[in-house]
Amino acid sequence: MLLIACGTSGGAGSGQLAGGATVPAEVTFDADVAITGAELTVTWRVVNRSSKELVAPTLVTHQGKVPKGDAYVVPAGDNIEIAQRLFDWPDEVEELAVPPSVGVLRVRPGTTESRTIRVPRPLTGYHPFGDAFDDGPPKLPSDPVGVVFCLGVVPQPYPPALALGKADGVEIALHGRVPYAQQHRFCTDPVAFR
Image (cartoon, rainbow, N blue to C red; front, top):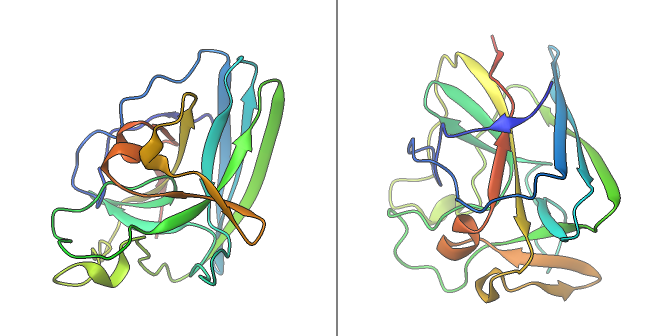
């Protein structure tokens, strides 16, 4: 399944367009989404034929934090979004000592990177800002029309607010308004989900 630009949801499934960074034309993405009774599997691939490096969020253990899965699982209108991307700072989250961080994968010029992620069923919501929402994290639709997979990439030059760094050998970045706005998000077409 070919990834296409997606504008179905913003930071918390608000229906806003994703960040506006332009990705070089020489960067291609594709993904396959498979749904079985036990899990949802996404295999994605990034081919970077451009002269710019990219970073893509990948949920890995870092700084003593263990993700609740291989991807974020958030509402996207009538769909559910399986996401490996950066999120905007939600309006509903006012106080948080430190923005949430996420592991990142560097996609260097002239390279191809691919990953397979698995999300167990039934799908459970997972948002990087988690319990910081005043009314709890966004709820998934009870009867979703479909599932969409979204991958975010940030091309060079990287904004300082991305705060790229290393912790225990893992490269990390921060979620937030500036990193969210500097990413380009690609999404699959919705896949029927029952």
